[in-house]
Length: 267
Image (cartoon, rainbow, N blue to C red; front, side, top):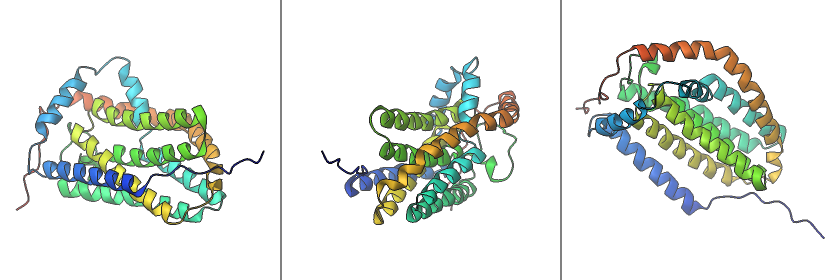
């Protein structure tokens, strides 16, 4: 019996259009609120009070590990390994699209941070653009890169591995957002804006990749990429955890304001 060729699951243009519309709407509403056109403080304060009740104990260590998975250095490694897997299989168009998408996100995030200039929930000892809170760069970058990897696992594997790996990466994306609020680094609206921005980028990435469909062989390097990323994380964690622990312990010592200070509207 002749075996049917494997096809790659895709999303239709209508679904992508709806996803882009929702992401843009959420991002515009939150950005306008952070700029002072309407208050975000009530919902941010409500969520912060809920999270505050769970702070402390063994959850701190878990959140420290989770947030490390969203560090810029480790995400850069994950992005480079993912793009390299495309080049390994000759998927040059896909490699270019992912490179442009991953590389442009920091520019957009930093631009918005400098424009809104929203203070963080605590006097975190950050400098430069990292002093500002909106949107969460941790969430935006991790949701983009791990979201893209989740999509790749969905088209690469079958059966329980497809759903297990895809679900794991999506759960990781959600947990990184929770960790940023738990550790006192961001308000809820910062995190939500990061998700919206990443969602918009993922839609644009899906549209760009669909312009030049490639055979399923592009996914042959994904298992190797996943292995490299998984093997590198314990090493990265061992090196970075002491500094991260010192940073977030310092945040705990600072007094947290009762509500975020939304910027006044521009004249």
